[in-house]
Length: 234
Length: 232
Image (cartoon, rainbow over all chains, first blue to last red; front, side, top):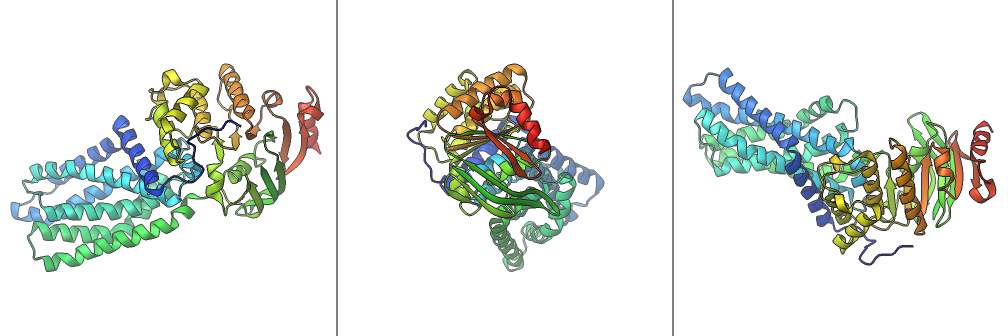
């Protein structure tokens, strides 16, 4: 039998496998720009439509901004999650990943981190555009922290549910139906915490919402870590 | 190398495999034949650790499934009619990606060896989505043997290929099998597998209904053997 030096039998190291999947997702997206461009166009259209649809007095803008922002992120994120898993499923690549001698949770974390990166890239572009359109400064470190925590929870749950939805014929419809009821605590806490930072509320009013975001991220990441293997297996 | 005993696979109320027994020695090239819906792909997916058996025992390369799936995966290569490749990555990048997942050291050297073997060195930096179906299938074989597996499973690898691409694929299959690997391949194309395999098993009604070695079967008798197996 052909035997080649340098071929290891043991499984790939866990972090290396995660890094490889993230690298692969980012590189493929850099080439195709299908996922981010779809998310971005959708997100910009949503904030533009809100801008024309809601005539706001300047003092009211601050109160409505968190809701508009998180509705935009949530809808755009769904597009990205669907596309990210569809790429794996349509060419059989999900089987390719599952055939590799890596822990299935490494595949989950690789995909979730890739999805998080796409959501954050969209947020980095949307926030300045929103600031220009609504004449509100969104360059607030606290708000950026909320975006990071909210996106993490969204990507953690969304990656798990999109890997379930992608196995069905109605994946495009099924994902939002599954995702939005589960993601309500993240959206609610993210809207409240974002509003708190934008309105300069005292930290003791913002902390409870940040705590909910952190707890949600930890709990749902742990649940996804435990159940991903069963979700992707036949 | 592969031992399967009383394998049963059910999807809900539908039973696809009904107590299947299957034994393959190291270095054998087994063609798994059978009509559409016989359960060939289901059986291969179980051997590949992509699906769990309902009942029965399965061992690949000395490791039990599903309990030791990680060890099986490290010793197994799989080629299906889907390429399992990323269209927006180049041939080289696809192999490097899978090589990292398999923990291959000296990866660049191994990727070069595989590209040479499958005849895609000149197209190594081209995106896979620009490849013909035949080239994608050759690269899929390269991906499957990248980690030098002891067992390679092929599920209808000729599907969608034209005559020239099929001939080229056959040469590659002979090369893969000729290196002492154990090969199991499902196919509908009797003429094509007749010269490739060393053994022919017919999967019908959820069990292996007949098995014959090429040496015992003689030339041009595969079709009769196949028909008799299905009729019996």
